[in-house]
Image 1 (spheres, helix red, strand yellow):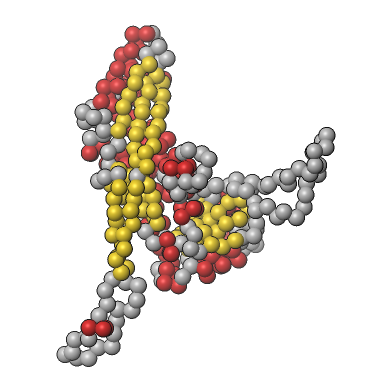
Image 2: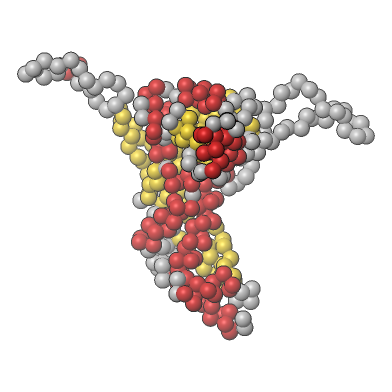
Length: 335
């Protein structure tokens, strides 16, 4: 492809993106909604969570809950006394959207066929959404404001936020005993509708448990190998989230010193195995993901390199609406 063709190609792509924007580089409202839908589609976790389009970078969401008994013994023709009346518990959670940016280079080759099919806008949106949705899922799971990684340090993800109920798997692989302890740890009020709950974990952890079930010499054992139906425990599905970690460090025992390094210098610290995963038991709809509706997508054309640089800027945050209805399992050996 010659220089003139490259320039024409990039100019078409640049114009296609500009058609999606208002004067400030932000996506038009309809395009912003479409982009959010694409983001949700690309992320396993966001597809299960409650995604909230935020009208401002900070937004309060009201939480209403009946935490105590509302029914009383009634008498015909008699109203309940004042002390027998109940009121819902009102509280608020705040989503504080953090700023994230992405710079993506789209080459001539990746754009050429799309221009000929006249669906360039859709292609660019899908390519961006695929990459951004994947990265969003990583921070929604692994975010930690104490992390040395600036990307993960933007906000706390679900593994850090889930603190009220914690189960230590003791370095064991996922078994029915671990799942039993997890369900038993969740307060009974959240078990009334078990079909709304899910075990969220890593791909290898789910595969390992599926393989364990498949080893049973039963008709049902083959089912777990031959089909992609969710593995269940007590009616609760075990769902694999691709960005769940599988390389968390094992807790140091501190009992067995490692051999001294060559050349002297004392005892070397014992190597820490990094083969641990985690599990979260929750109603996925309990997870609120707020995305500020002002999504900016701008372009910069590098004709000599033959690429169109697309810069996307968005803000988002995540919070459990009711953290007490969650359980985290730590120290699970990844299969």
